[in-house]
Image 1 (cartoon, helix red, strand yellow):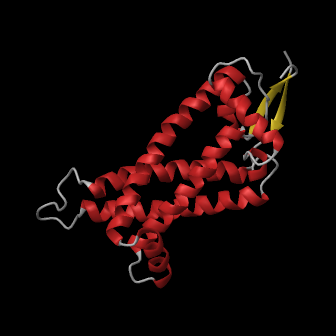
Image 2: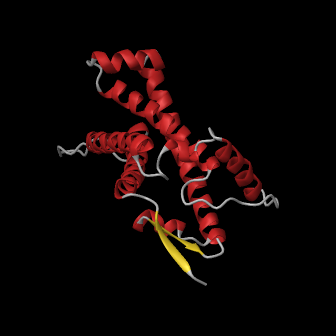
Amino acid sequence: MFYERHQVWSVLLRLFHWSFVLSIVTLVITGLYIHFPWTNTMVIGNSYFPVATMRYIHFVAGFVFTAALLVRIYLLLFGNAQERFWDFLPITPRNIKNLFKTLGRYLYLNVGHEHRLGHNALAGIFYFLTFLVAAVQVVAGFFMLYPESVFWQKWGTMLFVSQQQGRGIHYLIMWYFGVFAAIHIYIVVWNDIFSRNGLISSIFSGGKYISEDY
C-alpha cells in the first residue's frame, strides 16, 4: 500500500505542544507539593527551603505555560490550515457534520467517517475549551503572584473576588488538566491504532501519512 506524507503541524505548533505538556507536568508536581508539602518545609541546620524552591520552579513553569498559551492563540489566528480555529471548531456546516460523524465513530456506530489531516471537530471543541480554562488558570496564578499589580488584581478580583477563592479555583483547574491529559492520551492512542496515519509521530515530525485509499 502506498502512503503519501503530508506536513500538518508547524515547528511552532510542536514547540507549543511540548512546552505546554512539560510545563503542565511541572506545575502539577510542584503545585501539589505547595498545596501539601510531603517533606520537611525546612531542613534543620540548613538554609534549604523545599517549599521556596518548589514555588520558584512553579513560577518559572507558569511563565513557560503562559508563553505556550500565547503562541497557541497566535496559531489559532495565523497558523497553517490545520492550526487555525475555523478548521476544527463546529462553526461551519462541514465541521458540524464532522462533529456528529466523529461522535458516531467513537461510539462504534456505522455512520461513516470523514478523514482529516488536522483535528476533528470534537477534539477542536475540547482543545478550545482547554485554552479558555488555561487562560483562567493564568489569571488566577498571576493574581496570587502579584498582589501589588493593579492589572492582575483588577482582573483577579473580577473573576475570583478574593485571593482565597482564586487559589481554590487554581487548585481545582489543576485537576481538570490531569483528567484532560488522561483522556487525550487514550483518544490519541485509539486514533493512532485505528487510523494508522502516524498521528502520534506527527507531533514529533509534523507529518502524517495518508494511504491511497484513506
